Image 1: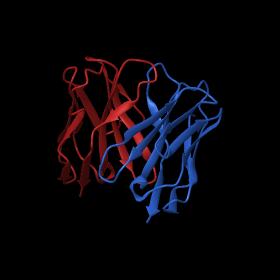
Image 2: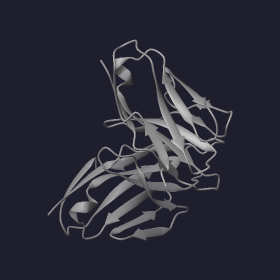
Image 3: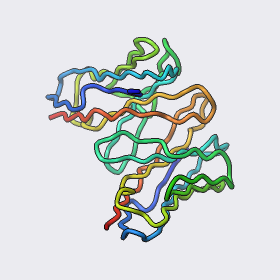
Image 4: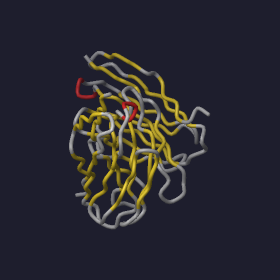
Length: 113
Length: 111
């Protein structure tokens, strides 16, 4: 039972380069989320998708784009990476019932030089 | 603005030394409070959901409680394997179920 799978695990980019972080879940969840985690700041929501075909901005969306490819997959794209985007990125999914918790992947550690 | 604040930032305990972590929140109309455990290099792992004030949940050496303004995570007789960062989160005020997280408390238990 894989749960939420993120690729890659590590990535180093130069300023201005682009990349896409991939996320897939096998729990048949409708809702999916992208968070970033920085020391001392906790997890901050970048974008989320309440269902296939819909996406919406979270707390820190600037510099990112997302695609909900299908019910299983939700990707995060950095079009022109900046050093401020150095962070650990987590994808999560959630069931539909009230009070359902988020289930997280193991993250992508991104360094932008 | 909805806020979630955790204290202390770090906690160093001797094996067997019980202690508590605090999570205070300012969101009104609480729709649940969540506790997660995060090990280094891993994603957060769900521990508990607390639904309403007065509720308590237990799992092994962990016990979570909830009041109208804060939640406590009590660690009783901790072991080194309880070392981790503990996160709490609450849904923000919106139509969608988005969680706002605290910055976490890093617990280190020495043998």
